[in-house]
Length: 336
Image 1 (cartoon, rainbow, N blue to C red):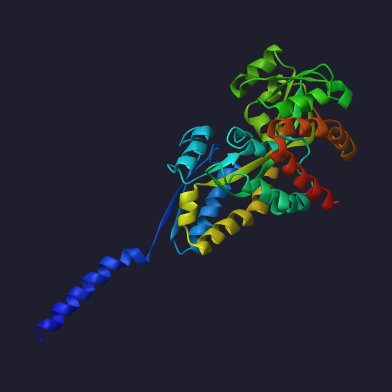
Image 2 (image 1 turned 90 degrees about the vertical axis):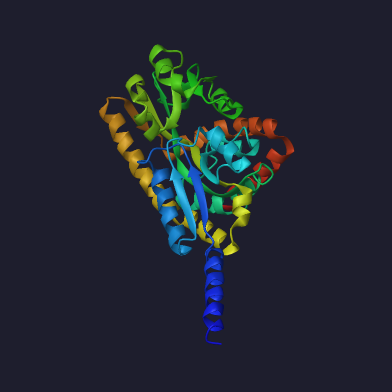
């Protein structure tokens, strides 16, 4: 007995040592995105990573790759679909080719200006239906992140809605955005983003639409005389996971991840607002004529642009798009 007991003990110890790693399952997710390390999306992805690691006792690790380190947005989207990338946080504007239904977010004044109402819309039936629309696209969409609003700039005066008539604006290649400008009597020209500064400088187009921090970063204000803070276009991010990775997570870890992304939204929104305010000051100091559209004017913009842009969306997406738009309308009306 004195010789067999140590032998048995050694066997048992070896067995436990071999089994130990299986008891501490780790889940590592690479998350790619396009913004720099100083911008709101990256800063708050890092915060989410900290919360998730803390609340799963280190079992789930998020590795964040900013500035397109893992490819452009199309490549990252495809990586999530194929499983070569666990997740991406993508601007909705870059997802229409993968899921045409998400282009509903291009419709002007879709998201309410009031932060609480906007949150209710994202968290309610409309937001869930939009997230669910990714389920047959090889992606799991778990939340929407607000990432600012678009404004109008031009080399020509923008003192009223009537001033838009006859002007040429650069847009992304979107029938919805083209109809937005057509409704104002303006013409829309789809141009690559990299050509925009020169196109504004040389008069190929009179104006453009972008968030204020983008207008500042790309120095568009150097070649634009007028800016109207209209907040007409919502810039929303969609948080997308690979289905195989997501389904491999225990249910409680899925909940932790969803809660962490939702929890940082108020801080994310405040950080973005500060960046926008700083950008606005830079534009003002440059000598650009800056005007803040009041509530009445914004309501007029919505009245003119919303229906034609919505019609373009339904023409593109058919019955499924109409169903999502109906869900939105019911949710929006319930907020009033």
